[in-house]
Image 1: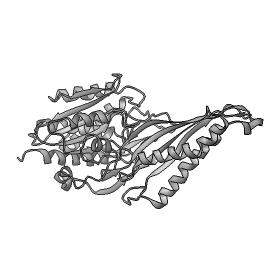
Image 2: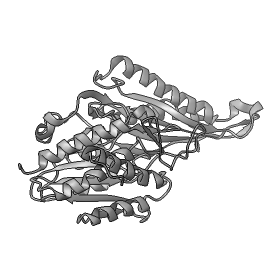
Image 3: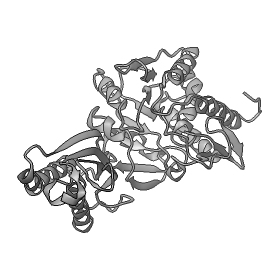
Image 4: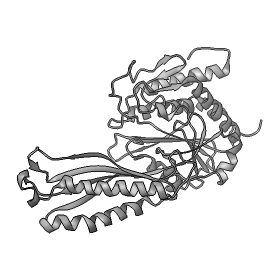
Length: 396
């Protein structure tokens, strides 16, 4: 680590070095994150902190949990995910897994979403380990957030089973270091429509799977328009109502063959006050009552299948919780609620831990070529984490 007489600059350089190490691990969700988890675990052990590793059923993915401070009082969670989206797009001007500094920005896959936060947390570990803490700080890093928050439930369940669970979780997703107090939930579904095939010149005799899939998609779009007009609404969200839409579709084998299969995916992104499960069941009921009988009138073996890809819950407004009250005066400026996903809803719903979102970088830079985080944002994050550390420390 470069030496400097300025302690704040030393801490920032430390965070940059940690970020360089973290970005170098290709933790695209389809790959194992164990090398990165092992790297973080080794670092924690160097500072006298023994982490808990929670592997998934394959052993190739894992979560990390570490406590710094006493176990008999409620503390705060600093939460991040270790996986990143693929970096296969054209437009990268430097290697996506080689952190590159240009014009006050650090470029690399995950630099913004969300290894920048993880690097800042690692940078303050020595301070936390050396401090006399009145309340614990829990470090929680998960696998497979980008493909449906798959790792976080195990962390939330583990924390909820403690004799004294945490009182607040701070999710370090990129928010430009502002406070976000709500997040939508999501259900991702795949619908398979099974029809009958044959020469397209005899189309009236067949059950065209694409045709009937399109009718279901039209139902989804119709309901989305209705919700957009009638609500429910929460004007604090970037999009103030729930949304639903088809996202991918495939079917057919040739221009002169009636397709016997069409598959499409769709999503429901819901406000915390909107029952997405009820919306899904309403859609299934409509399809089964209005579309399926027409298909089966021609062929009884046709059908509609529904498969859930993944789901995660919404995160409500927890500003009235005891945990938020303990930290509220050191929180950054409030910026509203967001329509993208995070693990905050998992901590809240499964673990019973009130959650907020605060992290460095902008979501506008996430999932893009030349993803970057501004170095100034890391500085703001380190300042915030320093305030958190001071709040849970014993008075001098």
